[in-house]
Image (cartoon, rainbow, N blue to C red; front, top):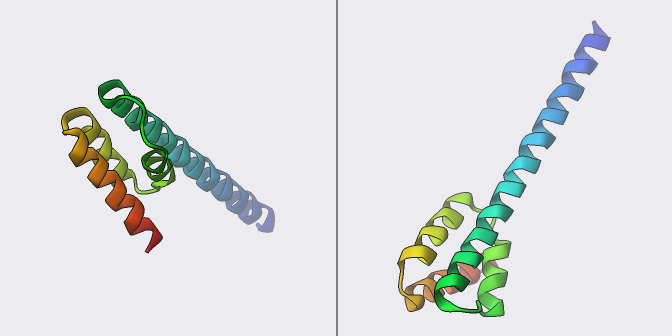
Length: 90
């Protein structure tokens, strides 16, 4: 019985690590997609905005930013990313 419990605990830990790794990779891919979309529309992304996008760890925010980068005006996009960076540091 203790061996089975240990197996279940180890398996659960591995699954949780796998899920977290997938989540991290998904957010990194969304951030890179957002940066690429921004740069395709507006040219080189300012370093401060790039840092804000790369540091964002909220998937919902990244999804909103990605949509905004594809549909918004440059000023709207810059303001949203800047506000996100400010919100992160406070």
